[in-house]
Length: 62
Image 1 (cartoon, helix red, strand yellow):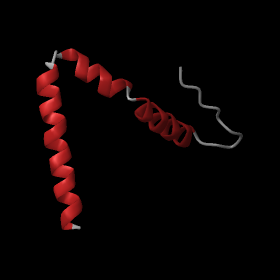
Image 2 (image 1 turned 30 degrees about the vertical axis):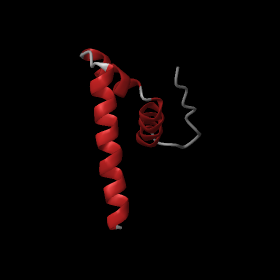
Image 3 (image 1 turned 180 degrees about the vertical axis):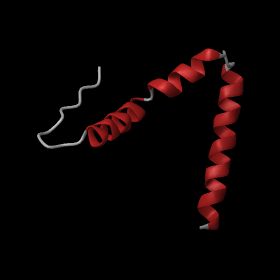
Image 4 (image 1 turned 180 degrees about the horizontal axis):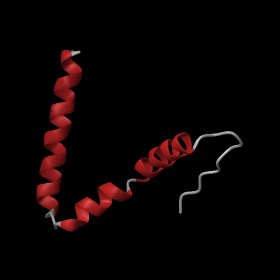
């Protein structure tokens, strides 16, 4: 459960922004989307390796 304490004089928009940031860090939405369709472990691993190769390529260019 995410708890956001609203400080005195703080706008609701600011508190909502902090809530959204905290919610995003928990990864709930990401996990929900991943559970919607089953992905075999071999496919998940292949995508993970493909992403790692992509990131490594990006690091070499910079």
